[in-house]
Image (tube, rainbow, N blue to C red; front, side, top):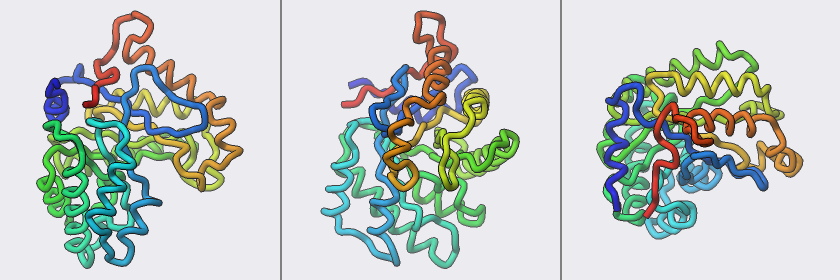
Length: 273
């Protein structure tokens, strides 16, 4: 098996022509992005949060069973979404760090033994104050094959507001560890009720901005994995919304899908095990 993941850890040190990875973490009904996107594994907050609420820690057996259940794409990155143990407060940072280190270690033990198996935490970059960046670095040191997965979700129809928030979270990510890949999560729905799909023109601007930003090594498209923000009615129409064709058009040019020269490498980068 080629040591493809080892190269990923150095991509932020490469030139602008470095690989640019787009991951498909959507689960809309009968909808897959395709077009050169890569798989990604993700354990959602609605699974993890109850297990670690109020200082709790699941048993090793229970947690590893969950990892095995949700890590359905062997060899691809694993994102852990445990939002109630973020490193937000000095009062809880030590305990939360210990919990995350334990969960991370237990997860790595049941993932394929391929060198460089990436594990990261959704939203932790962007929700950690500078005074606690050292705690985050200890988490990274606990499993050095790491990537940063900040949130770049959308709260209004203003591209300028979104771009400003993106710049802030990217600066925080690079301050935590400038050598790691940064793969923000994006979502074609507003991150506030009623979670409507926002205008495709805004989505297209965001995709172009992500690809053009020197501190972005790719991104993760999320959506449809939480019934609370995309119910049955939403699921039925998700694949008919213009975001999907716009995403595929963007990817077609990015990766040279239709035999034209690709703008960037990174098409279906991970081969699994």
